[in-house]
Image (cartoon, rainbow, N blue to C red; front, side, top):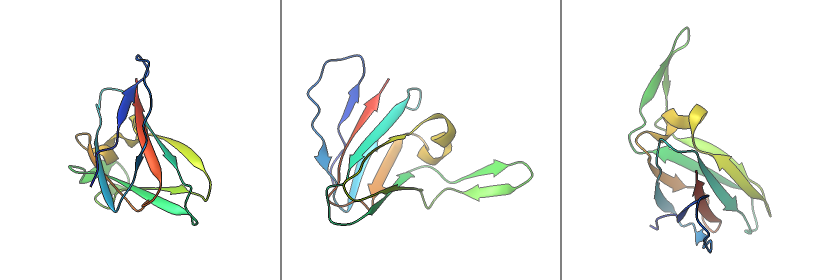
Amino acid sequence: MAVVNKYTFNNDDVIVPITLGASDTAVLSTSKTSVIVVANDTAGALTLNIRGDTATSVDCPGVGDIDLTGGLDVLVGIGETRKYRLSEARKAWLGDGNITLTGATGATAYILET
């Protein structure tokens, strides 16, 4: 289990993506805009699952409770590099900002925050 490296737009940095394993973690600042960048150089499409450790459910008026415990899936195709926003509309999925990443073994990733 590795911790995904996080960088800010306000600094000049050398970005070092980590190779994702079976289960990795990251800590997001929920008051900031965060983007995860995932590169899939494996031989198959991957489905990255992003699960906030404290995400449970959210009440949607007219619909009822929506279960968030299964996490949020992001498809990353063969040879693709994908950026995915982890804020605003998806904030409920992130819980307190402590997230677990699974399902994308072999892909590389890092997080950018503003």
